[in-house]
Amino acid sequence: MHLSFSKLFLTGLIVAGAAYGGGFATSAKLEHFLGEPLCEPAQTLWQGRGGWGGIVAARDGTLVVFQSPGGGTCRRSRDGGRTWDAEILLAPDAKGGNALVDETNGDLLYINPCEGWLFRSRDNGATWTRETCELRPDGFGLKPGLEGVGAMQAGITLAFGARKGRLLSPARIMGPKNSNDVPWRPYHYSTALFSDDGGKVWQTSKPFPVMGTGEAALAELSDGRILYNSREHMSPGNRFFAWSHDGGELWINASRSPDLPDGVRGSSYGCMGGMLRLPIAGRDILIYSNLDTDAGEMPRQVGASTSKGREKVSVWASFDGGATWPVKRLVYDGPSAYSNLGVGRAGTPSQGRIFLVFEAGAKQCYESVRVVAFNLSWLQNTK
Image 1 (cartoon, rainbow, N blue to C red):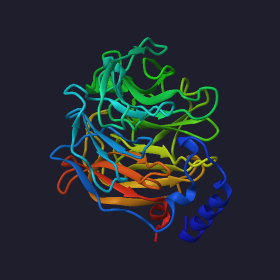
Image 2 (cartoon, rainbow, N blue to C red; image 1 turned 90 degrees about the vertical axis):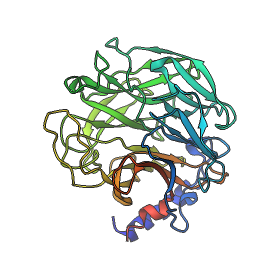
Image 3 (cartoon, rainbow, N blue to C red; image 1 turned 180 degrees about the vertical axis):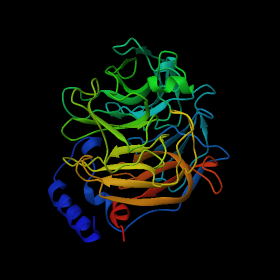
C-alpha cells in the first residue's frame, strides 16, 4: 500500500468511527493512534535471559509485562511505557502462564489452569494472590499440559454477542504424552481455554483444525467472530488462520495467510508471534508481530527445531479484520525471536500507544527481553 492511499484510508476511518464509545473493546478513537509518528527506542526489561509472558494494560493504564519461563515475575509501567518499575515476583513457581485482563471487574490474571492455579491482582499488578482453578478436557479427553498456555499472546475478554464477558486464552495440547520430543510434534495442536465464571473453571475448546500447531494468538472482531492465528511446526509456509463463531468453542475454516510469515521463511520451524485488535468501535484494525527474513533453513528431521536466521522482528497492520495485511515495518534489525503485543487505554498515559515485547540481542536472539512503543502513524508511514 502506498503512503498516500494509506493516509486517505485512515482519515476515512476517523470520520466513520469517531462517534463510537463503550468498553475497552470500543473505548478508543482512531485519532488516538495517529498524530505525529511515534516509535520510541527499545528499552530492556530483562537482560541475560530471553522469555515471554505477555503484556496487558490495566484499567488505569498501568502496563504489566510478564517474564516466563525463567522466573514468574512481572514489571509495571505507570506512565505509558516511558519508565518501568522494579521486578515483582508473583511466586517462584508462577511460570509458564498467560496474562489477561478480566474486563468485567478489572482484575489482572496470570493463569496456568494446566497446573491448577492462577494469580489475581486487584490493584493493577502491584500485588498478586494465588487461587486454585479447574481445567476440563476437550472432545478427545485431552487437556493442555506441558507448556499449555505458555508462549502465547495475552488472552482477552469477549466484548460482543451472547458470550460477552467470557475469558478466552490461546493454548496448546502437546499430544497424549504432553511431550515436546520430536516424534510427538505431529500430534500437537493449538486450542483455546475459556472461562465463564471469572477464572474458577476453564473449558478446553475443540481443537484448532490443523495438527502440528502451537504458540498462538487470537482476537475478537467487532461482529463477534474470533480470528485464531497459530504457529505450525511441520511444514514450511505462512501463518495458519482459523475462525470461531461461537465464542471460541469451535474453530473452522483453516487456511494459510497469504501475507504473514510464520517466523523465518525457508524453514518449517515457525516462531511465536503476537496479534491484537485495536479497541476502536466498529473497526477491525489488527496488528501482528513476527520475524521478516528469508534467512531460514529446513531442519534435518521433519518437525525438529532450528533457530537459524531468527532476526528482524517486524509489525504488520490489517484494516479489514485480517483479510489483507498491506503495511509492515521493521522494528529491530538484528537477532530476535518471540514477540507479544499490547495496547494502551484511552484516557490514560498509555493512550494511543501500541507495545511490542520481544526477545533480542546484539549477537544472538535470546540475550534480553525488550519493549518498544509505537503508534499507527509510524506503522503506516512506510516511506
